[in-house]
Length: 365
Ligand SMILES: Nc1nc2c(ncn2[C@@H]2O[C@H](COP(=O)(O)OP(=O)(O)O)[C@@H](O)[C@H]2O)c(=O)[nH]1
Ligand SMILES: [Mg+2]
Ligand SMILES: [Zn+2]
Image 1 (cartoon, protein in one colour):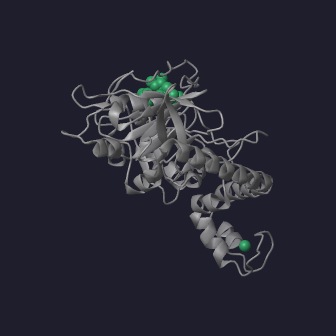
Image 2 (cartoon, rainbow, N blue to C red):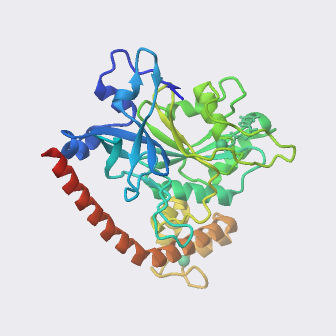
Image 3 (tube, helix red, strand yellow):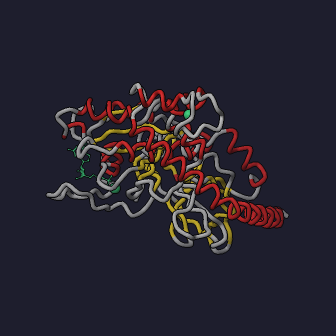
């Protein structure tokens, strides 16, 4: 289904691509394939095939954007948001090479599967989406913010359904307390101008991904920004509980030029985060840890423990401390568990890349 998109007047191939987030860095990564391939951005992945957005899929006259369909070999791990090199062969378009990823959402593995579970690639912003009503648990916000930091993109907390709460500002303030250093925006799809706080994040060429529980209002946000019901939203059930209808991750070009990725309900459970992401999520705790007298302080009974002192005088809440400890333990556990697997996967990805290089070389001749 064509998605409305307004490319600038007289848009060249390059500026069409820059609406998709293409820049000099991508051009450099693509250079070895430039003679034989076309660059494309993956908008949606299905088994064996992908919807891709290319410079050619913009029809500036009709102001529509129609993705092309490309085959994906089972050995090529493609994620939504990937930049790829497209080959045009006898069997049609195919995704030949996945260019290096700048950010990866959902690096870690939930189950025992040995495959990397990449939810999305090359994001600029992860929109941690929570409703005013029912009030979100701070632990959920922390987990999703950590997931955002972990991706390499910047998290922003979006508090939705401002119109439904008697005290939306209060809910936003609580959310901000669970996300120090992270911008919090309060939105509503029904209030006039209710999406304005989000607009500064939707500059042309930016890629944003909505994460959050089912029912948080993610698909409604996309629809409101498109001003068209491109994505199905769920009916409100009488019990107010969510039932998710978004079954596909799909990159949607917005009329203003940003790309928005809607995801089925992501709670963050099973998606482990790294140490670094935990540090970024709990900057005030990390600052305290720096002040502990002993560098290996366990913050239990040690003398000169700045964390215990802050807990005592109330500057650090027990809840934040517990949450920090829990995510730290998970990060440590996941690091141990994935270490051997990551080494094996890295070796495999190098082998695949070498094969791809050889293939690309053959095509060039
Ligand atoms: N009143 C109000 N309802 C909203 C708003 N945003 C979403 N909803 C409702 O919340 C429910 C869940 O929205 P949906 O977008 O499907 O959530 P998703 O599962 O995160 O994609 C739907 O019934 C929406 O109509 C809003 O800003 N205000
Ligand atoms: Mg949805
Ligand atoms: Zn300490």
